[in-house]
Image (cartoon, rainbow, N blue to C red; front, side, top):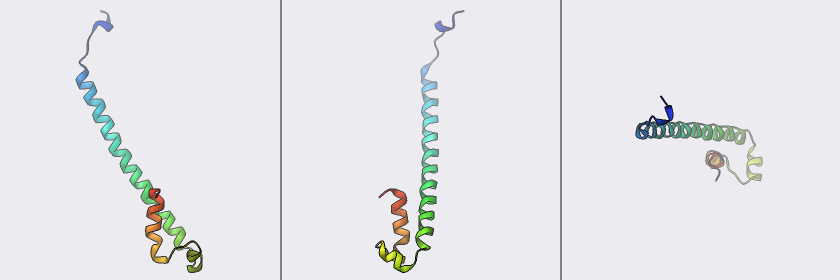
Length: 76
């Protein structure tokens, strides 16, 4: 029997592919959120290690560190 003459239904395969893409999309978003959180935490630790004078030199106050770290991780 010639296998090229066998027609397979395309709907179930398309559905499975769509489910797979959606699952990877969700998983990818979770990974991206974790990476952004980790980057913000690293930036906040690095900025916290600076002295108050060094923070003033770059235009930050100690209370602005968290916001600056989150913006940095978000690419703003």
